[in-house]
Image 1 (spheres, rainbow, N blue to C red):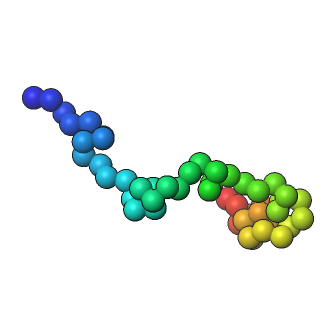
Image 2: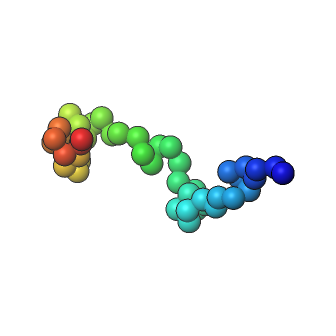
Length: 48
C-alpha cells in the first residue's frame, strides 16, 4: 500500500491558483517607517 502524496490529496485555495506570489505577503518597510500602513505595521502588540 502506498500513501498518497500531498500533491495528490490537496488542492490549493482559489487565491493561490489565481497567482498570489510571495511578494504579496512581504512587509512594506516604507509603511513601517512612515506608519502609513495598516495597524499591523505600526502597532507592535497587534503584530503578535
